[in-house]
Length: 404
Image (cartoon, rainbow, N blue to C red; front, top):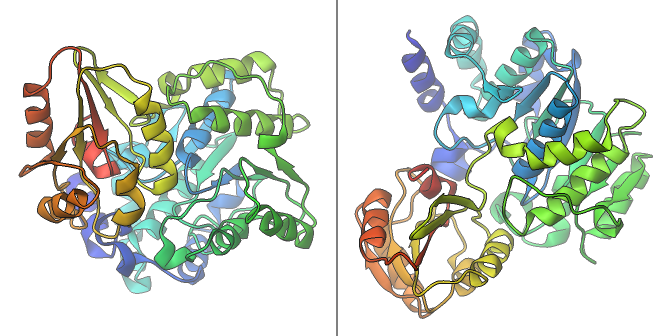
Protein backbone atom coordinates (compact mmCIF):
# COMPACT_ATOMS: atom_id res chain seq x y z
CA UNK A 1 0.00 0.00 0.00
CA UNK A 2 1.14 3.52 -0.81
CA UNK A 3 0.25 6.48 1.44
CA UNK A 4 -2.60 7.39 -0.90
CA UNK A 5 -3.93 3.84 -0.87
CA UNK A 6 -3.73 3.66 2.92
CA UNK A 7 -5.61 6.96 3.27
CA UNK A 8 -8.25 5.81 0.78
CA UNK A 9 -8.61 2.60 2.78
CA UNK A 10 -9.03 4.65 5.97
CA UNK A 11 -11.75 6.74 4.32
CA UNK A 12 -13.59 3.90 2.57
CA UNK A 13 -13.10 0.71 4.57
CA UNK A 14 -15.41 1.69 7.40
CA UNK A 15 -18.04 4.36 8.07
CA UNK A 16 -16.89 7.97 8.20
CA UNK A 17 -19.33 10.44 9.75
CA UNK A 18 -17.95 13.25 7.60
CA UNK A 19 -19.24 11.39 4.52
CA UNK A 20 -22.24 9.31 5.52
CA UNK A 21 -23.54 10.79 8.77
CA UNK A 22 -25.79 8.77 11.07
CA UNK A 23 -24.66 5.27 10.08
CA UNK A 24 -21.13 6.05 11.30
CA UNK A 25 -22.19 7.03 14.83
CA UNK A 26 -21.09 4.62 17.57
CA UNK A 27 -23.09 4.56 20.78
CA UNK A 28 -20.43 3.41 23.21
CA UNK A 29 -16.68 3.55 23.87
CA UNK A 30 -16.06 -0.22 23.64
CA UNK A 31 -14.06 -0.01 20.41
CA UNK A 32 -11.95 2.92 21.59
CA UNK A 33 -11.14 1.10 24.84
CA UNK A 34 -10.11 -1.98 22.83
CA UNK A 35 -8.00 0.21 20.55
CA UNK A 36 -6.14 2.07 23.30
CA UNK A 37 -5.44 -1.26 25.04
CA UNK A 38 -4.12 -2.70 21.75
CA UNK A 39 -1.81 0.33 21.42
CA UNK A 40 -0.70 -0.04 25.06
CA UNK A 41 -2.43 3.16 26.18
CA UNK A 42 -0.41 5.90 24.46
CA UNK A 43 -2.93 8.49 25.74
CA UNK A 44 -1.49 8.02 29.25
CA UNK A 45 1.98 9.21 28.20
CA UNK A 46 1.26 12.93 27.81
CA UNK A 47 -0.80 15.67 29.44
CA UNK A 48 -4.05 16.74 27.79
CA UNK A 49 -6.78 19.37 27.72
CA UNK A 50 -10.16 18.14 26.47
CA UNK A 51 -12.39 20.57 24.54
CA UNK A 52 -16.09 20.02 23.74
CA UNK A 53 -18.93 22.33 22.66
CA UNK A 54 -21.41 22.96 19.87
CA UNK A 55 -19.54 25.90 18.35
CA UNK A 56 -16.10 27.42 18.81
CA UNK A 57 -14.28 24.29 19.96
CA UNK A 58 -11.93 24.30 16.95
CA UNK A 59 -11.06 27.98 17.43
CA UNK A 60 -10.73 27.56 21.20
CA UNK A 61 -8.55 24.45 20.87
CA UNK A 62 -6.31 26.24 18.36
CA UNK A 63 -5.94 29.31 20.57
CA UNK A 64 -5.04 27.16 23.59
CA UNK A 65 -2.43 25.33 21.49
CA UNK A 66 -1.09 28.65 20.19
CA UNK A 67 -0.60 30.03 23.73
CA UNK A 68 1.37 26.94 24.74
CA UNK A 69 3.48 27.30 21.59
CA UNK A 70 4.23 30.93 22.44
CA UNK A 71 5.43 29.72 25.86
CA UNK A 72 7.88 27.31 24.19
CA UNK A 73 6.10 24.00 24.72
CA UNK A 74 5.86 21.09 22.28
CA UNK A 75 2.13 21.02 21.60
CA UNK A 76 -0.04 18.36 20.01
CA UNK A 77 -3.36 19.45 18.53
CA UNK A 78 -6.11 17.05 17.48
CA UNK A 79 -9.11 18.58 15.68
CA UNK A 80 -11.84 17.56 13.24
CA UNK A 81 -13.04 17.62 10.56
CA UNK A 82 -10.26 18.53 8.14
CA UNK A 83 -10.85 20.99 5.31
CA UNK A 84 -8.30 20.04 2.62
CA UNK A 85 -5.91 17.40 3.94
CA UNK A 86 -6.57 14.56 6.40
CA UNK A 87 -3.28 15.40 8.14
CA UNK A 88 -4.67 18.77 9.32
CA UNK A 89 -6.36 16.79 12.11
CA UNK A 90 -3.09 15.87 13.85
CA UNK A 91 -0.36 18.48 14.27
CA UNK A 92 2.57 19.26 16.56
CA UNK A 93 3.50 22.93 16.85
CA UNK A 94 1.51 23.65 13.71
CA UNK A 95 3.21 20.98 11.60
CA UNK A 96 1.02 18.22 10.16
CA UNK A 97 1.69 14.57 10.93
CA UNK A 98 3.92 13.07 8.23
CA UNK A 99 2.47 10.97 5.43
CA UNK A 100 4.96 8.24 6.29
CA UNK A 101 3.81 8.05 9.93
CA UNK A 102 0.16 7.75 8.89
CA UNK A 103 1.05 5.12 6.27
CA UNK A 104 3.14 2.99 8.65
CA UNK A 105 0.54 3.20 11.44
CA UNK A 106 -2.21 1.92 9.14
CA UNK A 107 -0.02 -0.87 7.75
CA UNK A 108 0.99 -1.99 11.24
CA UNK A 109 -2.54 -2.07 12.71
CA UNK A 110 -4.73 -2.72 9.65
CA UNK A 111 -5.63 -6.31 10.56
CA UNK A 112 -6.67 -5.24 14.08
CA UNK A 113 -8.77 -2.40 12.67
CA UNK A 114 -10.53 -4.80 10.32
CA UNK A 115 -11.12 -7.47 12.96
CA UNK A 116 -12.48 -4.96 15.47
CA UNK A 117 -14.50 -3.05 12.83
CA UNK A 118 -13.32 0.33 14.06
CA UNK A 119 -14.85 3.49 12.63
CA UNK A 120 -12.81 6.07 10.73
CA UNK A 121 -12.94 8.41 13.73
CA UNK A 122 -11.85 5.75 16.22
CA UNK A 123 -8.84 4.83 14.09
CA UNK A 124 -7.92 8.50 13.70
CA UNK A 125 -8.10 9.10 17.45
CA UNK A 126 -5.80 6.11 18.01
CA UNK A 127 -3.39 7.49 15.42
CA UNK A 128 -3.30 10.87 17.17
CA UNK A 129 -2.70 9.35 20.60
CA UNK A 130 0.13 7.15 19.29
CA UNK A 131 1.76 10.03 17.40
CA UNK A 132 1.67 12.42 20.36
CA UNK A 133 3.10 9.70 22.60
CA UNK A 134 5.90 8.77 20.18
CA UNK A 135 6.84 12.40 19.63
CA UNK A 136 6.79 13.11 23.39
CA UNK A 137 4.63 16.23 23.36
CA UNK A 138 4.51 18.35 26.52
CA UNK A 139 0.75 18.82 26.17
CA UNK A 140 -1.96 17.82 23.68
CA UNK A 141 -5.18 19.71 23.06
CA UNK A 142 -7.85 17.15 22.17
CA UNK A 143 -11.02 18.39 20.49
CA UNK A 144 -14.15 16.26 20.83
CA UNK A 145 -15.58 15.06 17.52
CA UNK A 146 -19.27 15.15 18.46
CA UNK A 147 -21.07 15.28 21.78
CA UNK A 148 -18.69 14.22 24.53
CA UNK A 149 -19.91 11.37 26.71
CA UNK A 150 -19.67 8.74 23.95
CA UNK A 151 -17.04 10.43 21.79
CA UNK A 152 -13.96 8.35 21.00
CA UNK A 153 -11.73 11.01 22.59
CA UNK A 154 -13.43 10.52 25.95
CA UNK A 155 -10.92 7.96 27.22
CA UNK A 156 -8.36 10.57 28.31
CA UNK A 157 -7.84 11.93 31.81
CA UNK A 158 -7.09 15.59 31.10
CA UNK A 159 -5.66 18.29 33.33
CA UNK A 160 -8.71 20.36 32.48
CA UNK A 161 -11.98 19.93 30.60
CA UNK A 162 -13.47 22.75 28.52
CA UNK A 163 -17.02 23.13 27.18
CA UNK A 164 -17.36 26.16 24.91
CA UNK A 165 -21.17 26.40 24.59
CA UNK A 166 -24.35 24.45 23.88
CA UNK A 167 -26.54 24.84 20.79
CA UNK A 168 -28.80 22.60 18.74
CA UNK A 169 -26.76 20.49 16.34
CA UNK A 170 -26.65 16.74 15.66
CA UNK A 171 -29.94 16.51 17.55
CA UNK A 172 -30.63 13.02 16.16
CA UNK A 173 -27.71 11.77 18.29
CA UNK A 174 -27.39 14.20 21.18
CA UNK A 175 -31.02 15.09 21.93
CA UNK A 176 -33.50 17.73 20.85
CA UNK A 177 -33.25 20.11 23.83
CA UNK A 178 -30.38 22.20 25.17
CA UNK A 179 -30.53 20.24 28.44
CA UNK A 180 -30.16 16.88 26.70
CA UNK A 181 -27.27 18.14 24.56
CA UNK A 182 -25.60 19.66 27.65
CA UNK A 183 -25.78 16.27 29.39
CA UNK A 184 -23.88 14.69 26.48
CA UNK A 185 -21.24 17.45 26.45
CA UNK A 186 -20.93 17.36 30.25
CA UNK A 187 -19.97 13.70 29.85
CA UNK A 188 -16.35 14.84 29.46
CA UNK A 189 -16.29 16.14 33.05
CA UNK A 190 -14.14 13.69 35.04
CA UNK A 191 -13.84 13.09 38.80
CA UNK A 192 -11.85 15.88 40.53
CA UNK A 193 -10.72 17.38 37.19
CA UNK A 194 -11.67 21.07 36.88
CA UNK A 195 -13.90 22.26 34.04
CA UNK A 196 -14.16 25.62 32.30
CA UNK A 197 -17.52 26.51 30.73
CA UNK A 198 -17.35 29.18 28.01
CA UNK A 199 -21.03 30.09 27.78
CA UNK A 200 -24.14 28.87 29.55
CA UNK A 201 -27.88 29.46 29.39
CA UNK A 202 -30.59 29.06 32.05
CA UNK A 203 -31.21 25.58 30.61
CA UNK A 204 -27.58 24.40 30.55
CA UNK A 205 -26.01 25.90 33.69
CA UNK A 206 -27.83 23.53 36.11
CA UNK A 207 -26.68 20.55 34.01
CA UNK A 208 -23.05 21.66 34.26
CA UNK A 209 -23.30 22.37 37.99
CA UNK A 210 -24.85 18.97 38.65
CA UNK A 211 -22.16 17.14 36.63
CA UNK A 212 -19.38 19.07 38.39
CA UNK A 213 -20.87 18.38 41.83
CA UNK A 214 -21.29 14.69 41.05
CA UNK A 215 -17.64 14.49 39.97
CA UNK A 216 -16.32 16.69 42.79
CA UNK A 217 -14.88 18.96 40.08
CA UNK A 218 -14.24 22.69 40.40
CA UNK A 219 -16.24 24.59 37.76
CA UNK A 220 -15.48 28.01 36.25
CA UNK A 221 -17.79 30.08 34.03
CA UNK A 222 -15.75 32.21 31.62
CA UNK A 223 -18.67 34.44 30.58
CA UNK A 224 -18.94 35.73 34.15
CA UNK A 225 -15.31 36.86 34.23
CA UNK A 226 -13.97 40.27 33.23
CA UNK A 227 -11.07 39.18 31.06
CA UNK A 228 -9.14 41.50 28.70
CA UNK A 229 -10.22 41.55 25.05
CA UNK A 230 -6.87 40.82 23.38
CA UNK A 231 -6.54 41.22 19.58
CA UNK A 232 -7.00 37.91 17.76
CA UNK A 233 -5.71 36.49 14.50
CA UNK A 234 -9.20 35.02 13.97
CA UNK A 235 -11.39 37.91 12.83
CA UNK A 236 -14.94 36.82 13.69
CA UNK A 237 -16.79 38.89 16.29
CA UNK A 238 -17.81 35.59 17.91
CA UNK A 239 -14.18 35.00 18.90
CA UNK A 240 -14.68 37.42 21.81
CA UNK A 241 -16.40 34.59 23.73
CA UNK A 242 -13.79 32.02 22.74
CA UNK A 243 -10.99 34.35 23.87
CA UNK A 244 -12.57 34.69 27.32
CA UNK A 245 -12.73 30.90 27.54
CA UNK A 246 -9.05 30.57 26.59
CA UNK A 247 -7.95 33.15 29.15
CA UNK A 248 -10.00 31.38 31.84
CA UNK A 249 -8.32 28.09 30.88
CA UNK A 250 -4.89 29.53 31.55
CA UNK A 251 -5.98 31.20 34.80
CA UNK A 252 -6.59 27.61 35.96
CA UNK A 253 -3.32 26.13 34.72
CA UNK A 254 -0.98 28.47 36.60
CA UNK A 255 0.24 25.79 38.99
CA UNK A 256 0.88 23.30 36.15
CA UNK A 257 2.69 25.43 33.53
CA UNK A 258 4.70 28.62 33.42
CA UNK A 259 2.57 30.77 31.08
CA UNK A 260 2.97 34.56 31.08
CA UNK A 261 0.32 37.13 30.21
CA UNK A 262 2.39 37.97 27.11
CA UNK A 263 2.26 34.30 26.08
CA UNK A 264 -1.55 34.42 26.34
CA UNK A 265 -1.76 37.71 24.45
CA UNK A 266 0.60 36.58 21.67
CA UNK A 267 -0.96 33.12 21.46
CA UNK A 268 -4.38 34.63 20.78
CA UNK A 269 -2.94 37.14 18.30
CA UNK A 270 -0.80 34.61 16.40
CA UNK A 271 -3.25 31.70 16.40
CA UNK A 272 -3.55 31.53 12.60
CA UNK A 273 0.21 31.75 12.03
CA UNK A 274 0.91 29.17 14.72
CA UNK A 275 -1.82 26.60 14.00
CA UNK A 276 -2.85 27.40 10.38
CA UNK A 277 -6.55 27.28 11.31
CA UNK A 278 -8.72 28.24 8.34
CA UNK A 279 -12.35 28.91 7.51
CA UNK A 280 -13.26 31.13 10.48
CA UNK A 281 -14.42 34.50 9.06
CA UNK A 282 -11.57 34.11 6.60
CA UNK A 283 -11.05 36.95 4.12
CA UNK A 284 -10.20 35.21 0.85
CA UNK A 285 -9.71 38.42 -1.18
CA UNK A 286 -10.65 42.09 -1.43
CA UNK A 287 -12.40 43.99 -4.28
CA UNK A 288 -14.82 42.31 -4.19
CA UNK A 289 -14.43 41.24 -0.59
CA UNK A 290 -14.85 37.46 -0.26
CA UNK A 291 -15.50 36.00 3.19
CA UNK A 292 -15.89 32.34 4.08
CA UNK A 293 -16.94 30.75 7.36
CA UNK A 294 -17.57 27.13 8.34
CA UNK A 295 -20.52 27.93 10.67
CA UNK A 296 -23.22 25.39 9.85
CA UNK A 297 -25.80 25.31 12.65
CA UNK A 298 -28.32 27.90 13.85
CA UNK A 299 -26.21 29.21 16.75
CA UNK A 300 -23.06 29.57 14.66
CA UNK A 301 -24.78 31.04 11.62
CA UNK A 302 -26.71 33.56 13.71
CA UNK A 303 -23.44 35.03 14.98
CA UNK A 304 -21.89 35.01 11.51
CA UNK A 305 -24.94 36.63 9.87
CA UNK A 306 -24.92 39.35 12.56
CA UNK A 307 -21.35 40.16 11.59
CA UNK A 308 -22.17 40.02 7.87
CA UNK A 309 -24.85 42.69 8.37
CA UNK A 310 -22.13 45.07 9.61
CA UNK A 311 -20.24 44.84 6.31
CA UNK A 312 -20.56 47.74 3.86
CA UNK A 313 -21.41 46.75 0.29
CA UNK A 314 -23.45 47.67 -2.77
CA UNK A 315 -24.74 44.12 -3.20
CA UNK A 316 -24.39 40.97 -1.09
CA UNK A 317 -23.83 37.62 -2.82
CA UNK A 318 -24.08 34.34 -0.86
CA UNK A 319 -22.68 31.04 -2.13
CA UNK A 320 -24.60 28.48 -0.09
CA UNK A 321 -24.49 24.71 0.22
CA UNK A 322 -25.41 22.35 3.06
CA UNK A 323 -25.45 18.66 4.02
CA UNK A 324 -28.63 16.64 3.81
CA UNK A 325 -29.25 16.28 7.56
CA UNK A 326 -29.29 20.02 8.17
CA UNK A 327 -32.39 21.57 9.76
CA UNK A 328 -33.16 24.08 7.02
CA UNK A 329 -36.09 25.57 8.92
CA UNK A 330 -33.67 26.53 11.69
CA UNK A 331 -30.93 28.07 9.51
CA UNK A 332 -32.59 29.61 6.43
CA UNK A 333 -34.51 32.33 8.34
CA UNK A 334 -31.14 33.66 9.54
CA UNK A 335 -29.95 34.66 6.04
CA UNK A 336 -30.56 38.19 4.70
CA UNK A 337 -33.35 38.45 2.13
CA UNK A 338 -31.59 41.24 0.20
CA UNK A 339 -28.76 38.94 -0.95
CA UNK A 340 -28.34 37.19 -4.30
CA UNK A 341 -27.96 33.46 -3.67
CA UNK A 342 -25.85 30.90 -5.54
CA UNK A 343 -27.07 27.48 -4.43
CA UNK A 344 -24.72 24.52 -4.81
CA UNK A 345 -24.06 20.99 -3.58
CA UNK A 346 -20.71 20.26 -1.92
CA UNK A 347 -18.65 17.31 -3.22
CA UNK A 348 -19.71 14.97 -0.46
CA UNK A 349 -22.04 12.01 -0.19
CA UNK A 350 -24.07 13.95 2.39
CA UNK A 351 -24.34 17.08 0.23
CA UNK A 352 -27.93 18.29 -0.26
CA UNK A 353 -29.11 18.66 -3.86
CA UNK A 354 -28.90 22.35 -4.82
CA UNK A 355 -32.42 22.37 -6.31
CA UNK A 356 -33.93 21.10 -3.05
CA UNK A 357 -32.04 23.84 -1.18
CA UNK A 358 -33.20 26.47 -3.70
CA UNK A 359 -36.86 25.41 -3.39
CA UNK A 360 -36.74 25.43 0.42
CA UNK A 361 -35.01 28.83 0.42
CA UNK A 362 -37.81 30.34 -1.69
CA UNK A 363 -40.23 29.79 1.18
CA UNK A 364 -38.04 32.18 3.22
CA UNK A 365 -37.83 34.75 0.39
CA UNK A 366 -34.23 33.81 -0.42
CA UNK A 367 -33.76 33.73 -4.19
CA UNK A 368 -31.00 32.68 -6.55
CA UNK A 369 -29.87 30.17 -9.17
CA UNK A 370 -28.46 26.67 -8.74
CA UNK A 371 -25.01 25.60 -9.93
CA UNK A 372 -23.45 22.23 -10.72
CA UNK A 373 -20.61 22.72 -8.23
CA UNK A 374 -19.32 25.00 -5.48
CA UNK A 375 -16.56 26.30 -7.77
CA UNK A 376 -19.08 27.20 -10.51
CA UNK A 377 -21.31 28.96 -7.99
CA UNK A 378 -18.32 30.93 -6.71
CA UNK A 379 -17.12 31.75 -10.23
CA UNK A 380 -20.55 33.10 -11.14
CA UNK A 381 -20.72 35.14 -7.94
CA UNK A 382 -17.35 36.71 -8.82
CA UNK A 383 -18.49 37.46 -12.38
CA UNK A 384 -21.66 39.16 -11.17
CA UNK A 385 -19.94 41.22 -8.45
CA UNK A 386 -18.53 44.72 -8.57
CA UNK A 387 -15.49 45.75 -6.52
CA UNK A 388 -17.75 47.25 -3.85
CA UNK A 389 -19.80 44.07 -3.37
CA UNK A 390 -19.33 41.35 -0.73
CA UNK A 391 -19.42 37.60 -1.40
CA UNK A 392 -20.05 35.24 1.53
CA UNK A 393 -19.36 31.50 1.16
CA UNK A 394 -20.68 29.05 3.73
CA UNK A 395 -23.34 26.69 5.06
CA UNK A 396 -20.95 23.76 5.47
CA UNK A 397 -17.32 22.86 6.14
CA UNK A 398 -17.38 21.08 2.79
CA UNK A 399 -18.41 24.20 0.83
CA UNK A 400 -15.62 26.24 2.41
CA UNK A 401 -13.06 23.47 1.83
CA UNK A 402 -13.64 23.70 -1.93
CA UNK A 403 -12.81 27.42 -1.99
CA UNK A 404 -9.87 28.02 0.34
